[in-house]
Image (cartoon, rainbow over all chains, first blue to last red; front, top):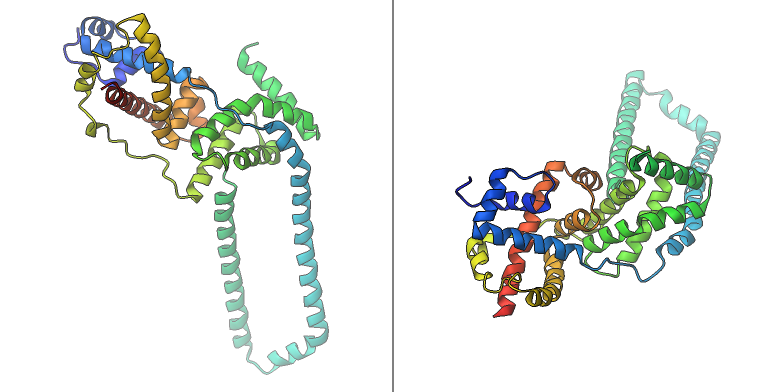
Length: 149
Length: 203
């Protein structure tokens, strides 16, 4: 038989009876006043927890959510529309710019050495990739925080 | 056919109906899982004001992500997972502590607590037991509220919703061992605090 007092974990397991307690544990609890009281207290505690009133909302959750569903779908489609609108505006602005200033832009780079142009283009592409990557990383972090699942 | 298979089949039928724009099927899902979601939200979120918005947010997320549900778990567990994560995010935004350090040793040594409460032991007679049950329920409610949100939720999921360790681990995203350890600590803290408060009120 176990001589020293059982620890709380053993007593909790004994009371919960999730696994068959060992004979030593049962014998100890039967003969030890302290552990027996502890087991009774845990048993009372678990009974008390189970008897606690179940919380409930003071409104009809199902009706409340169902009312919001069409609005939510509408919002998603609005977001998509906005995204396409931004792309359209950007494409339109670029076309206008190249249409009116295309030649000036070509002349601007005409007198510059090819190595300089290559340096400028490489720097711009690197910067662009870095900014896109950074923006995507921030977007992922924010989505994780806002819509964590 | 066992219960797990039956649940999966019902879940599958309901999800397919919702994906075919049947909002009534989603209403059935809400009714089936409302109890679990209410328990998680009310245990995780201290104030009543935000609970309505959070509960709504949980189901809107579930509705939007339902297409990605893989039936690897019960639908209720999956929605419970969304509920728990939504609450965790809410608490994180409000910078509220998820798990506090409950220092049991400060209150009293364990054996002393048992002996001190032996005189007030509710098991002495049936009448005392009935009176104690009423008092206990009140004190217990207060003591559960004093626990940290995660401990409160774990206790509720295990003892009230009668979920097993693996289901709780799935909902909370905690390893099963951590769930067991947190539950053990929560129960011990609750027992010690309960005895301490009861002893104080009995004097």
